[in-house]
Image (cartoon, rainbow, N blue to C red; front, side, top):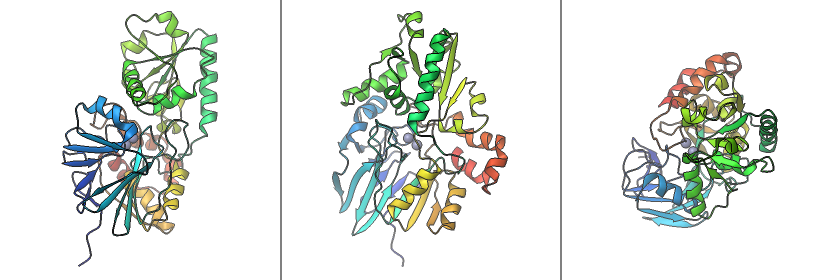
Length: 373
Ligand SMILES: [Zn+2]
Ligand SMILES: [Zn+2]
């Protein structure tokens, strides 16, 4: 009889029977190992949690009183003979790839990751393994990110232009990861940075965790609209189109997301500016990261799993699609573990963009189903 794999895919999450723990489970379990604090990976209701030290305060803020143990990158925890350790995933502050080893067999679970150093998350480190469980949110060749220095030069210029025109500047990005990445790359000679409460709560949690962030000022009922308009406003996706946002009119608002790379996404969010900025690896990042593991087999958890696994098989990997409940870029967002409307993005955008995407020979239906699941 073939031996049972060290990690398996169950209806609760990725499971290690030998170590009796789950990785990023979406249903309640006794022992959960968490890659990062985004809502689609760190669910409420587990008996105990293991995560990276830098996820600590955000997880306690989002999940309340949980039984949480945290470790550093490279530190090892033993569960029933299985060695568990964490390596930087470069996705957001505190995000980790989980390395699992038993009797010489090594698996790595990527969680979400990106390969570019964003200057605030510990940079991604490839980890050698036999089996790599990878995301592929942007596993299509149309997704190629510009270097972040170039993206932020554009953002800072746009902010300066808005100041000259007497228009407020609002930048929308999700509250853990994107918001801090933006914050650390703004040109503070232009003015002050004001934050929506959802973002400031996350900033405060990170600061409690010892993360040094640029100064920010929380927008409250007492904030002077005139002063705020002289700075820049960081706001979460949930604030788009709300009275909260409208009170800063006239404003120009930029939406930061990898989905902005494709036509129609900006229009759908009624954004004035689409800022193509993602905390997930682009096509080249995914292929190079997978290659760097030296793995024998790849399991794709979320994103364009069908087409990307087909591509990997063509270039000589043993690749498989697996079913999970992890989301893509924007459902990472706020404290809701439910799939958000943003998850429908790939379908809508690919229809808008059919010629570009179809040239890759995709089964769009399957990729979309995976995104929505
Ligand atoms: Zn995710
Ligand atoms: Zn994430």
